Length: 236
Length: 301
Ligand SMILES: Nc1ncnc2c1ncn2[C@@H]1O[C@H](COP(=O)(O)OP(=O)(O)OP(=O)(O)O)[C@@H](O)[C@H]1O
Ligand SMILES: [Mg+2]
Image (tube, rainbow over all chains, first blue to last red; front, side, top):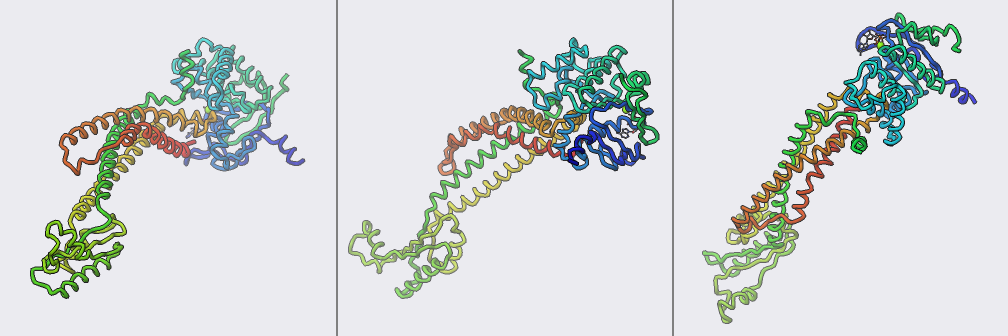
């Protein structure tokens, strides 16, 4: 009974007394405590250099805490095997601040990567990728090599790649920084839709407008510490 | 249609553009060339040793020459006994038999006629020594020791000569094995080097793949496939050159037929194995690459 209750309320991301530092540099974040519930939506805010990207990379399991414990989907990542880590990462979609696309591949192939990694058949991949790319208004640029795409186009490819597999956690680092307002609000709608379907979302952003408009709680980083700023009003 | 074909064999790592591919092609091609030649040498030497060993009989004959100083029959008997004792004392000897005078007489009769008293003639005494195994018998050492014990006795020298030949051929055989190993190690090292270089170049892409949930196997497979293809095709070239050289050598040596030495010839299975080397090379290179890639990935994010 007790375990049952735990499973229902268990946070999808849990950090206890986590510190982050790079090499011998001073700590960027100290004694962080953070629990994200399944299906929650947070903005991640803080000045440039506050550690937003670092915090996110810990959540997508690319960075180990220098101290403390991080659990994702209930697995303590300090003890997870390489294979377990790979399987956990498959449930996480990431939009990188600098996109990190495979520049030598086409937009289509970039978006197909997460599906191919899972061994999905090419026909199914084709259907899904084409559908999503036309939704983000990239059907014309589908076969273009990524290095020839514009910043905004790359950003949309990056987002398409992050959501193609309907991840359980979506971590997006400044996902609307390079696109015009129309596309930005369309992409935000996509994130909101995914969230309604159960995806836990964290979006790092500097945009006050975005935060004001959507009014989700904020994970705010300042002076190496983290505080949650609750949503001002309920999302209608 | 075309696109579908390419999609089937997608690979996120642009390994085809790798500069280290050229290095891999050259080193694998040269390795396979050297390996084929050394392997052919190994086959030939083994064949020769085998045929020589067959002709070393599992026994030897010893003759005791009649001496210049006239020995009394008793003395002669004593002398023969000493030689028999000598051979019976050797480890590898199964049985020593003195060939009876009557038998020698019989052997000699066609030349000497029936009515000759053998004991009055200076005929050699013959011993037949049966060995447990002809291979492990040291003819040379035995001959030397025998000379010290009984200077009038001698071993027929055919076996000695063959065994000397087998000994030197065996050291050649060891050398060819050594060369095979060296080539194998050198090839493995250069494959690892090429793969490691490539991993460094593509570290960023590999990291992205890992973040998307790719296992080490997924990444390693792309290397395995690529290394197999590159090694297979470059070893076909290396192998062709080696086979051509071997054919030329075979042609020349059959022209200079030198009896015993050229009696060894590669048979069909040998040629087939030599021709299948590119395939083995492909698998060997692939396995080496997989191991090397996986070890390095284990240290990455
Ligand atoms: N790989 C790294 N090695 C060393 N220091 C790093 C590394 N990555 C980040 N840092 C440092 O950590 C601090 C936090 O960086 P981070 O990228 O997390 O900030 P951020 O909040 O995402 O900033 P921005 O809003 O500009 O993207 C910075 O001082 C940065 O210099
Ligand atoms: Mg950042």
